[in-house]
Image 1 (cartoon, rainbow, N blue to C red):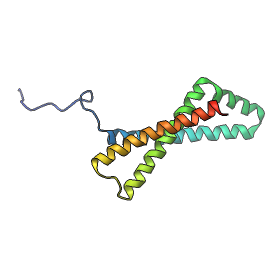
Image 2 (image 1 turned 135 degrees about the vertical axis):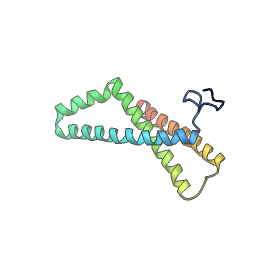
Image 3 (image 1 turned 90 degrees about the vertical axis):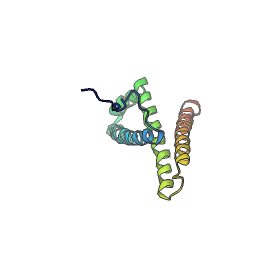
Image 4 (image 1 turned 60 degrees about the horizontal axis):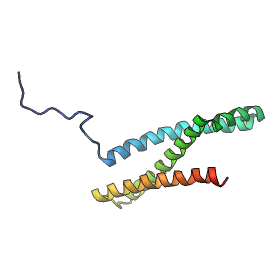
Length: 127
């Protein structure tokens, strides 16, 4: 049997629009933030447990993989916050037109990147 109907698009062909990608990323950053908060609580428990436990925790955080994890956590935090502010505007029925949705998405991404870069430049160059 041959059918003249078109095939459904594959994931390699179909490109998700920016609002869909941002919605998925917002949810993923929420998961990252909840996991990172548990790790941050472990770090604070190590701080309260004594100098030996804190030295081990500080060694983990100062390792390059720990620094990458902290960078990812801060990027997720700023992205989630900027996108959350965007959603607050939507809740107030501001910026719901299609061009405004795309523009606010671009602004949220740029602001998250700028805030992350500012935080890490303060950490490495000021402190």
